[in-house]
Image (tube, rainbow, N blue to C red; front, side):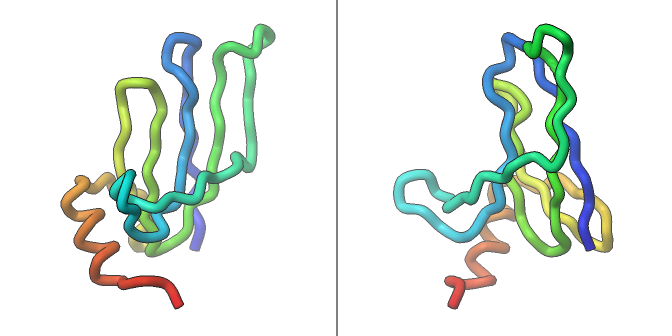
Length: 99
């Protein structure tokens, strides 16, 4: 199952992004694979708009819609759920390293 998630952004918000968490990283805590948007919507100036990302069941994502906001999400039963960093770490650790 996939779910679409749209991130709105403003000029003062910095670069918005979404990344799949793929494991642990010694420097950044989480290893991430940054996603390409499946759709973008821009204002005529190109400074505001939104990016839409395709998120998949059972995977953990880190989303950064603005310079001051960053959070984790997981898709369960075709629903997006926000989770905390502690829960994200527990899930990554329970999944182990990919083979």
